Length: 175
Image (tube, rainbow, N blue to C red; front, side, top):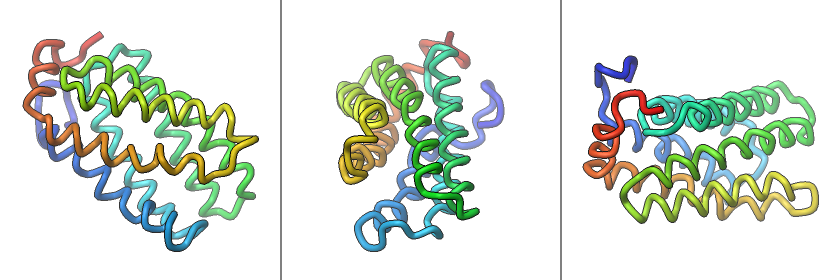
């Protein structure tokens, strides 16, 4: 978790943290849209993903895109908590979803399990394309992509053994 050669938490555990932390956001979307308090668990959700970005095989540029997405989404949450206008925070969030899409697609295409590849390509494409069309589509069009996020991480945890083989084949810090 903290270094490429020392595993403190396994990939399965790291992959399960994001869907657990994303659950309050999903519930909030359905029950109380726009609730500011959910931004705190959203920050934890994104910080947990940083460890997954570090562990999955990906080119450095894709890993950088993953970190860029997480940084912008955390920034967006902090902007919301500090009561900046929704339009500003939302634009920052959508800007982060373009590199998120790049990271999801790239890491998914490099994964052996077909379920991860398909789900990740659909998820990454949905996030990136919505971000480019977000000015003409309502926020509700992003929700299917939001539902795929926990599914993708659960697939990572479930297909853990195949992913461990991918990581071992690619090395601790694949290029």
